[in-house]
Figure 1 (cartoon, rainbow, N blue to C red):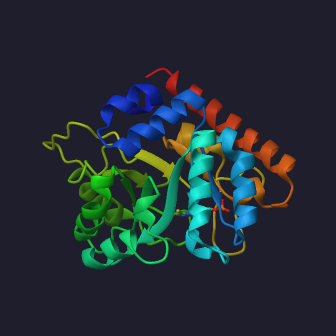
Figure 2 (cartoon, protein in one colour):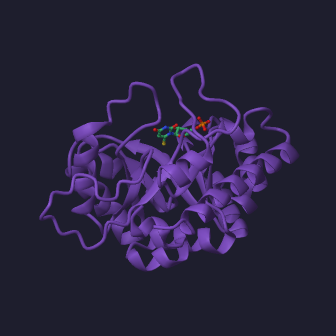
Length: 278
Ligand code: S5P
């Protein structure tokens, strides 16, 4: 295993200049959690209740704001209040995928005005580097950070091989705004040739497709355990959705217990990783 994988989250703060990356690592170190919860529900009330329940256990809350049926801007204010109350970062999982000019408008404007409240967002690298320029023209002045989807968790995903390598190269060329990847393993050293010199290859790896009880769903999702993800694959953050609120989104005690269970499993795997011999 290479060096970043054995550094603590706290030590890695200094490897980053982007404020959103620093904030996330600082929260992880302080709260001792590498758990992100993905809150994919369609009603505001349920959305806020789940976030308030999992808040103490997470470093990050991941949203799909476009699935909320009764959305209005007071919801954003309430989400921000919860992020201050519980100290977590916000990641709108928008998966931008268009030309620079269009993504800049989608990020800044429309109903949701994502850049104004989401510390972190993500994009598919498929359009090439112009998607990063478009998004950074909006996000960088606000101190936001971007993740590129260099791999996906689903069966048959096309984000493999040279696509993944090119995504990593794009990210290395835009270190000020690209803070990491949505991926299934560490991207450190990927695509580097013998004479390549890269000062700092410390990207944050946020990993969905995490579950302790089942191996997948009926629509191609594939789950691995926190141990496989953090210890064996060198990822930094586990993203868990239905594993935490899936059985009954109304049962706060059950949600809290599941969040604690995933937080403990993720932290234990991380501690084993940072203390493993080289
Ligand atoms: O490759 C991916 C990338 C993402 S961001 N696979 C994913 O599942 N996701 C997201 O993670 C997906 O959109 C969903 O919000 C979450 C996984 O949810 P779960 O309920 O399957 O844990």
